[in-house]
Image 1 (spheres, rainbow, N blue to C red):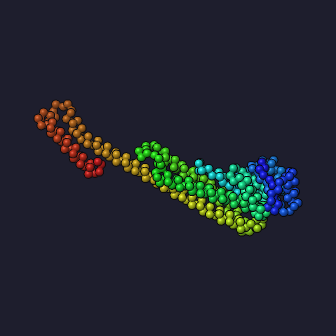
Image 2: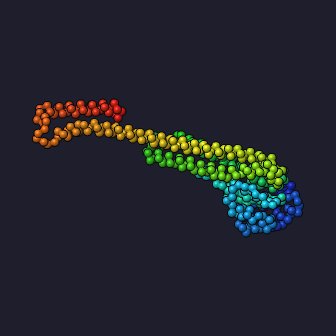
Image 3: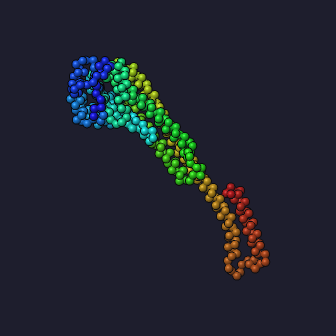
Length: 346
């Protein structure tokens, strides 16, 4: 649907009277004005009202209606078609939502088609209407303001991701057990470890989605800054400033991605070390259990032999046979105990 529409003459907004056809006619008749029509997820029928007045290329119109394009700049005769990918960050879910803004620029018109909830253009329109000098530069000034808003959002989201990354680092290097008792069970520890791993992967996926949205915008702005887009040549300095901000954000996103990889590697190493320590502790416990079993087995074996009901056994009716057997048991246990202590099993 059409969200907003207005004629801008010398940086001043004028309300449209009549239909869109009359608005286009008025803007063209005066020569120093341009028409800005803003749409949000329009249907084909709604867009046909505009294409009937402005000869837009069918492929560009199809892209604008169906969205799912990457950031790009295309030329169709005297019309520029620019696609931007604004972002919206949900901090609670560490989720990056990618929107899309499709812009058609001519000498006397700007048509913006927005998809998704990211980067609403109402704030950009208010900013421009409060700056007549910028608005007087025409559709190129509008393009600059929209690009500037999108890139500023990139910077804010980059800092939000950095905050989440710092929290993840703290969780990883504190053992992922903040607020958990020291005698936590193995099952709870495994659940916490799994949660940290999932959080790292989720944030890394969002960072990659961030890169996919903002990376293609770099060559678009470079094209404008190098003076290859005639419609925007008067605003090259402004676009250069946006490009500098974008390159700074691009470097930050690369750093976040590399740091997330390092955090994931460190987390997996810590998990492996904890598992190794647990296995070593289990081995030590098994050695102790086996040692005590061996100590019990020695007297049990001697007692078992002399507990057999045979008539003819050595020292069976000997007066000192009983105390001797006890003495042998004690001596054997002492010898085995010392051997086990010397070997480190006890």
